[in-house]
Each structure stands twice: as C-alpha cells, then as structure tokens.
Length: 111
Image (cartoon, rainbow, N blue to C red; front, side, top):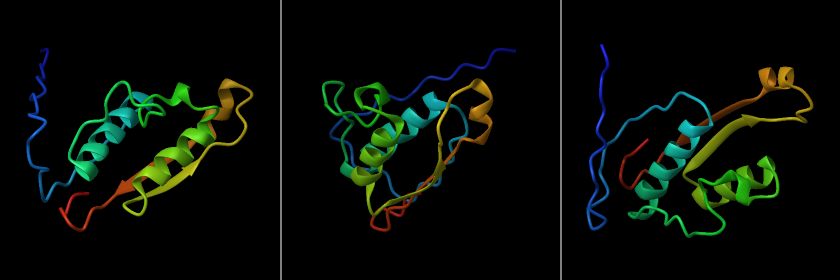
C-alpha cells in the first residue's frame, strides 16, 4: 500500500521544539533536509531560499569541501561530523565516501 506523509506547516513564530531525538538516513536530499531542520532548531527560523551562501544548496559553493566547511562553521559547536570525501574520479570512488553528522543543542536538549 502507498503510505502518504503530509509535512506539518510550521508557523515561523513557533517556539523551537525541545527534547527531540531524530535520525536521518539517506542520500544528499536527506542531508539537505537535516541541515534545514537543524538550522531551524539552532536559530528558530527556516533559512530563506534567497540566502547566499546557503546551507542546503551545495552547488552555491566552489566544492563539496567548501560546502562542508561552511555548514560546519555555521553549526559550530553544536555539530560534529564524521565525514570523508576524497577525490572522486569515478563512480566506484563513492563507495569510500561517508558523512555522519551529529547535532546536539544542550539548551533545547535536541539531537
């Protein structure tokens, strides 16, 4: 059967939720959903689509490493990243890429 999911519309004046425990497992689209959510959890508002550079638009950055360093600096000290991406010269090189991000905000008790 097809399961449907409807995302709740968030009121931008809403308070940041507390005591969340979430896990995201997936591809680069999942990474962008994660980054968007932790931006909201950290600052209490959703990043505008006009924001440059963006935390969710990797192509606005010169390279993946620039994108990674930008998101890491924006979320410091609340995020740790166990990440590796070497030189990608073929499809087989993606087998050695990993990105495990861990967010924890002790004020709101969200991770």
